[in-house]
Image (cartoon, rainbow, N blue to C red; front, top):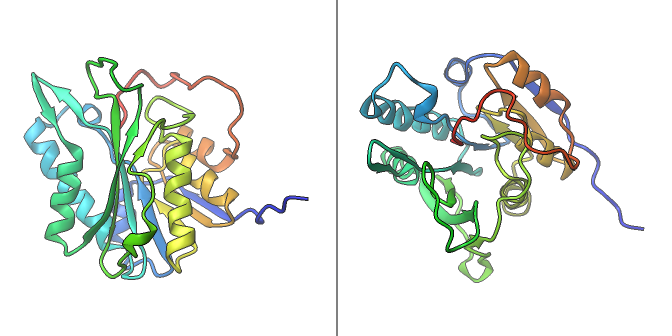
Length: 234
């Protein structure tokens, strides 16, 4: 009989992610996996102002990771006013400024290769950083994921990407708690718990925080929910 790891513990805080992070120092025993908000969620900011916010916030997220842990960002670029906004570059800019090294950068396909997309590209970035951890290059894994997997809402992180991120933490670090400061519906938290990892989420929306507390993996066969509007992924 196949044995499954016991479910990990979960806590979801309904509050502002920046305030929550700023109130804490380094999160010992934790790795962080998150997807930060898109420019569309800040209608009062110009693109240039949002970029400054994004880099500053990524730096804050990275600063709370212990040296033996990793920080992973799942981000989808956007095409804005006839230009391409590269979130992978913005995250790497923050990491370079804060002394974190890029361990790997995976491309996650959101649509089959060869398809044309408009507001967003057909792939997302999955980037992994650490200040102290280094990898054995003989144990590399696939750089391109053929699909992101099931999502629970339009801005959610696909389940296949969640599994890759959480398994990497489990197999390559000593940290056993996953923190997602922008947890949305809680896909990362649910997948982490299914692998036996504890999880902590932060979510400003009371409705999404409630979902994040309840979500279990596997998610089921429901279609992704658009109840909060067809906003772009982060």
